[in-house]
Image (cartoon, rainbow, N blue to C red):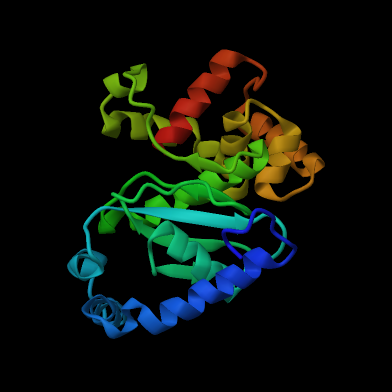
Length: 244
């Protein structure tokens, strides 16, 4: 069925179920890798920090992947098949998003039927930040209708690299102080700027109505007492948001 020249409706689901059943028969749950993964989970539940158990999972650098199916809500079979395709059994099935922890040496590729957001490679201490990066990358992928978006620096030198991180962070907190305590406004401004001021794409990325985006951006402009149509202002705010 997988190698057939033509696929009928449902063939992908059948192949996914077969792959999951095969993995249950031959998978890592009976191997040393599976035992190490269970040991890592127990240690985490008993209070061990992530950096102490990361070695049991098979590496110290990982990427976080947020994936959303294009057609329907994710289910356990689809989530397991996605994990197999990504090369990781560390899968978290949410209501409408599947999260995966993938070794950094296995670069995730676009998956048919899924939209993916991928974080930068991170050590255990930075997994929560990587989770946020993956969520934002997924939102951008959905807004731009891209199958996969990766978070990370472009590798090109920039002016931001000339400012010490501590000074940039202090400047960002001062600049954006009027928005402190209102994460919805901050995230809306960040997303709106990243999508070049597109109301529709920002609405898709945040899963809100475009009028809600307009109201939030207007509120940001009022609180910051600035003109968000000014490109210099947008640049300054984007610089601050990157270091906040």
